[in-house]
Length: 498
Image (cartoon, rainbow, N blue to C red):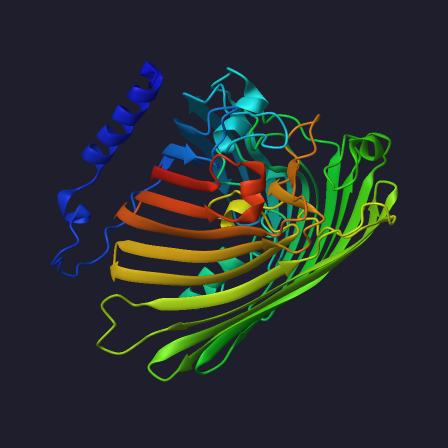
C-alpha cells in the first residue's frame, strides 16, 4: 500500500507536468519545425541571481527474488536545489542548498548476508532509517578568473573526464556518457549526491586544458545528511587536448589521481572476515590513465571510436595494490534520407577490469573505482566497474527534436570468479566502506541486461524521462537468489530548472 505522502508526491508530479507543459510541446506527430522557445530570463535580486532545480522520481524495484526480505517495492523522491550566485569579470561565487525528500522507503528490503540490500531503496533505508527529509549546503565556492587561468575554492561538484566539452555534439555525448565520472563524480543519480571540499585549478584555452583538484568528499549519496566532509582525500591532475580537423574531431587526456582513505573502517574485499577485521590500515591508491575519443565523417554518416584505460598501484591496507581496467568502444551514426528521420546511432564496446584471484597472496588486484557515478556505466545499478567484464551493444534514436530514445544490451561477467560481485559508488558516510561485495562462489556470469529510456523535452527548462530495465540472471545470481535470479527496474522522472 502507498502512504499518503507517496500518493501526494505522484499527484504533485503529474499536476506539475500538466500545468507547465504546453500541448504542442508534448505532441510528436506531424509537428512542424519552429524556432526554439527562448530560455526565461534569470531571477535577479539586485546583482545576485536566484536559480534552482527540482527533480521528482517514482522508482519501481524488483530485485533478484528473495524469500527473506521484500525485493519488490516502489518509492518516490524529490530534490529541490536553490542557488544564489554572482558573475563578475574576475570573480564569481555561488551558494547552493539542497532539500531532498524520500517517500515510502521499503522497511523490509534488507536480507541477511549474502543477499544483503535488495536495491537502492534498501540502501536509502539502511543509511537513514525512517528519516525522510533534510537540508544541507550543497555548494559554496568562490572562483577567481584570469584570461586563461581560474582557481575555485570551497565546496563544489567535480567530474573527472569532463574538464572540456567538445564542439561536436556526438563527441560531447560520448564524453558525457562514456568517459566522465568513471573515477570521480557527484553521483547525481541518487537523491542526495556528493560534493567536494577543496580547491580546483584550471588552465583552459582552445588548444589545451590543464586541471588540478585537491579535495575531500562530503557525506551524502544515500545518506540524507550531507553536511560534513569525510576523512578521505584525493589529488587529481589531467591534461586534455582537443583536436579539430576538416571532417573529424578528437579529444585525448592523460590523468593521474591519488586516493587516500584514513577512516580505518572494515574494507570490502575477498579476504575472510577475520583477515579484514585485523586490517584497519589506511588505503593509498594511485591511478594513472588516459582516454582517446574521435568522431569522423564516413560515407553518409559518422563513425566514432573510444579508448580508455587506467593502471593502479599503492597500498590496500596491509596489502599491496596492483590493478587495471580497459574500455574499447566504436559506433556509427547512419546518414542519408532513408534513415534521417530517426537518426540511428549504433555503438558497441567491451570493458574489463581486474579482479583478485587469491585473497592470501599479499596483493590486492581488484580494480578500485574510488569516487565514481556508477549509474552512468550501469544504468540498472546492480553492478559497477570493479571486477567486471561488460560486452554491450547500444542503439540511440532521435525520432523527434524533443524526443531521444536509447536502448542497451549488456552481457555481464565477473573478471575473476574468486573475487566478489561489487556494487556501490564509494564513500558516503563515516562508518561504512561505500562498496558492497557479494561472494561469487566460483561463479562468473551475472547474466544479460536489456534496457530502454525515453527522454522528452517538455520545454527549454523541463524534461521527462521514462526508464525500464530487465535482467535475466545466470549462475551467479542463481547461487545467491535461488528463488528467482531475474530482476527489473523502472522509473519515471520529471525535472524543472528555473
